[in-house]
Image (cartoon, rainbow, N blue to C red):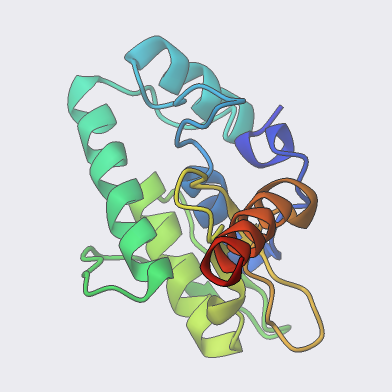
Length: 168
């Protein structure tokens, strides 16, 4: 099961799927941090890229740093994602990132999502204790919770109680 599916979420469109998946490796109350150790990270990577590279300790550190950078970018905070990528576009407008490493594939996704205008719909749950990344497919792009019945409801109850304390 992918990290995104583990949160009960539908995956983002293809141009953001790997980016969302990496973001959702962060630990929550329900799911361990899938980049916590090398064995867990290798298992996660083999599920999303069965023919992908074998991770070593240096790769794991780079993946954690990449995840942190992506979290900042998705929140709209200052951050830079640096690297090189080989992108090929064919006559039918299909885009391919041949034999790309994870960083290059994510760079390509970010570029493509920005070009297609889908980047702003990849969001992190507004609940500070919930680092889940979701793709907002609402009509006006205004979702702020990955799951309104859990994170949204808890925040709304807290806000209601705070208002009642103020006025009561």
